[in-house]
Structures are given as C-alpha cells and as structure tokens.
Length: 303
Ligand SMILES: [Zn+2]
Image (cartoon, rainbow, N blue to C red; front, side, top):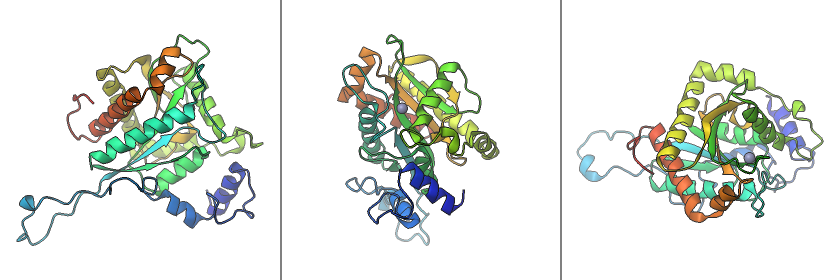
C-alpha cells in the first residue's frame, strides 16, 4: 500500500484526520512511526540487547580479523488489544488486554536475559494499536519472529486450555473462524469502519508466504509452542494447533503465530491467568519454544 494510502488508513483507524495530527501523536509522521518501530525503544529500561562480545579467550587479539558477531534475532511480541479495545472479559473482572501485556513483559524479560534476542513489543502500555499497524511495525523492524499473545472467551464456561493459531485462508474449524473474526474486529471497533473496508489480503499474503517458506516456518513455530506447553504441564485445548485468517498474522516474511493462553470465560483459567507464577510459567514456556524454534538449547528441555 502506498505511504499516502497507508497514512490515510492509519488516520482513519486512529479516528482522526491525517491533517490534524500533532507532533505528539503516535501516528504523526512516517519518520516518527519508524522511530517508534525501532527495536528496544519499547524497552528502554532493559539491559542492552546487543550480542555479548565474544570472551577474549576465544577471540585472541592476534587474530587478524574477528568473526562478525551474529546479530541477535529480533522477536516481536504482540500483546493483543489495549486501550478502548479491552478484549475478552472474565467473571472475576479480568480483562484480556491486561493479562496479555503482563505475560508479554515477562516473556520480554525472559528473552532478553538469554542475550540471544532483541525484543520489541507492539504496545507497551494500555493503548489501542490497530492490527495492521502491529504488522507494519514488525515489518519495518524486520522481525525474525512474530508472536501474538491473547486469552480467549467461550460461551461454554467449561471450555479451557491454551491453543495456538497460524494463518490460513480457510479456517481449520468453525471455532477458529469465529475466533479470527472476533480478533480481526478490533480494527473496526467504534470507528464507523466495516472490516471489509480494511484491505483484506490474507489470500495474497499466503501466496507470498508460501513462496518464502513462511507458511511452513509458522507451522513449525506453532507446533513447537504446542509441544513445549505440553511438556511444561500447560493445559491445552484438543487439536491445539488450529488455523484461520488472522489479520495480525499477515507479514509475508515473518514466521508468525497467535497464542491463546486460556479462556477468561472459564473460572479456573481466569484465576490462573491472573497469578504471577502462572504468567511466568507461560512466559518461560514461550521462551523455551522460541529457543527450540531457533535451535538454541535442547528442544526437549523443560522451560
Ligand atoms: Zn484476543
């Protein structure tokens, strides 16, 4: 999409005219957007994410040329919803937007502590960020992996467990299709925009993704998350890896998956999702999944 069209779309999604955006606006200018997308801007208080320099014993000063350090992989974490879009709601009053941000922050800390990754969050506070802006930020930053983090809701309060989703034009089942429709609606909430007004490029993206091998890489990522969750005792939904047309998973170059950590409509899941120890357990299992996906550490190791 052209930059002009993109700005107009973003302005529409932000509920504001492109001509009245002030310098302080999150959508002010492409330059500002680029600056916002820079890795580590989201985590100024974190330790530097650059690769640790090699210890001197393995890089003697006499060596004529140092081997260039491998650039740490950039992981984009996408806590779902935010601001005026609170996401799913639990009976005890838990909002999805809050628990997913808490887990994303734990996961950010876990990943940075390994010193193997750079980490960027698509939102760092309780703010609304349009789905396509999340995709755009990950693409601008040239992310190596995109993980969207959510918690679901179901009309049957007995339904519980985590599930993992990848992009597909046709959904694997009706529930996955309904979930994608709910998650995609975030872009249209209260803006007078129908979802069909927003360019829907799932089919196009899938062609580009299969040309680049991103479809298979995304599936491998999802299956790694499922296997790691199972090994770490995280309760799973049957047929845990499902597929549907999620707008937030449409970066052709970036392997991407969406994790639903449980159901806020289920009292046990809701309680667990608010307990810090469980949030940490989920974050550690996701970190172990990312390690296994990139082949670091042992794929069979517990988180
Ligand atoms: Zn959600």
